[in-house]
Amino acid sequence: MNDNLGTADRKFRITVGAVTGGISIGTVLGAVPLPAAASPALGVIAVLLLMTGFVGNCPVYSLFGVNSCSRAGNVSE
Image (cartoon, rainbow, N blue to C red; front, side, top):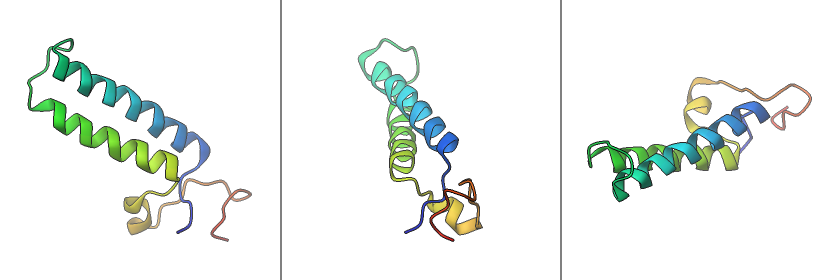
């Protein structure tokens, strides 16, 4: 499995995933005024963003042939 996420893309996914996860937990605890149904959806999105960010590979990017790695750091070449 080759990396297809560049450094900026990974940092963005990890940051947005952490914020989304926090909002999901805040919704469960009642600190964020969102419908209760939003919490599981936000949780799933957070987990997917965090997983792809930490692993460095996005299956959707692979499906469409997208690669945000720089040429010098690309392990697939």
